[in-house]
Length: 502
Image 1 (tube, rainbow, N blue to C red):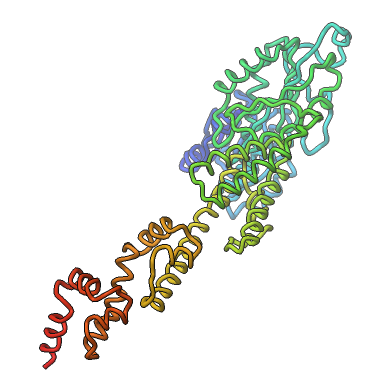
Image 2 (spheres, rainbow, N blue to C red; image 1 turned 180 degrees about the vertical axis):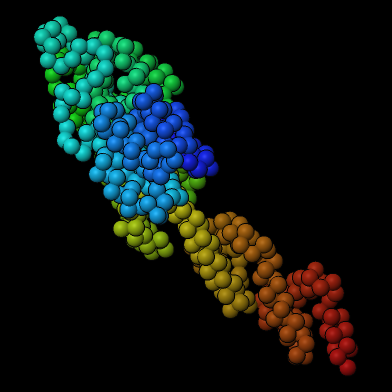
């Protein structure tokens, strides 16, 4: 943990600073708060904190005087000043005396995080170049010891890091620093583990480390480490080495494996360097499963779509070989191929913008998130096709109605209509009932009766003449249909309507 003190003659400010951030989650422990310069100096001499967040103007001793004392006594404490408007220039000049940064009141959270990270980074030499030997720490013998060059000793290299998906970059760096500090403390008394730290990554060199035992230990280790919100712990296991002479090279060799984190879904990710050979059948499998998924969507087989998409996504993950850009491309190309298939079938698609799709995929923080985005996008085609199918069916039923309106005088049997619209008679009957809510024969009878009523009320035609004119087989069939629909014979209906009009 990083040990820090706060000092300001306004108690409300020190209280506010203690609550401004979740210090423990950042690996920082506030070990003291002070309200004047003298007590602050005494606290620094006694506690030797790593960081001191000081008001530049305090009674009994100013922040500048404290900073000069720290420099003269060669104390390890790094100082960040807090200043008001009236002494802003004073605080800025104080950087010449060794202050790591200065903040203007009221303190802004993001600026405070940046200043703390800057102080930590400078102390660790991140800005001043990297010296391999100087950064090696922890238990065990150090690189270059003669006994470690023998072939009988071997080490399991493990790169440990955090996969953080939320928070600002400054917060992520501080979390990573806190985690690295935790690992240093955890292994400091272990003679079989050497800890090598570079930036945000930590390399563990475990003497005679057995893979299974190490993985079990790592899962247990994460339960004791600093709380991690919106992310996970990662352990990358490399090939065994027989020397501690080149830890930086070992670490650099493992860093590319971090890209595989994008595809991992476990809370604690255990990764291995990629194998050189690729699954020769991965692309073929991907193509086959993509075709099956497209056929499901075009056939609107809802019970199979979800299952086939999951199989397709698994094949896509394998074919991507740990390359997130490849995964993004395979998803985008699948959308494009589905769109092209719809267009070739003269069906309405979504006309996707490839650039927007690629950018959306790149914004995904994990393969699971990318998969969810494209799953929703691809499966939305089923809704589109259902809507299009419904519109087409409405067009078809409208054509059938129009045909009946023109040909109602003719012998309109199910067989005749089915042949006219290229359907099986049984299917035509069921289709017509589903789309209109009325049976086919009932609908034809209704259309004929509407025309019959017009002739009944506007002409002197006989019942049998009207029946023949509108398509009924004879007067009896016409009368029976009329009575069934209106509850009276055509003659009674005509007499009653004409009587009402006089």
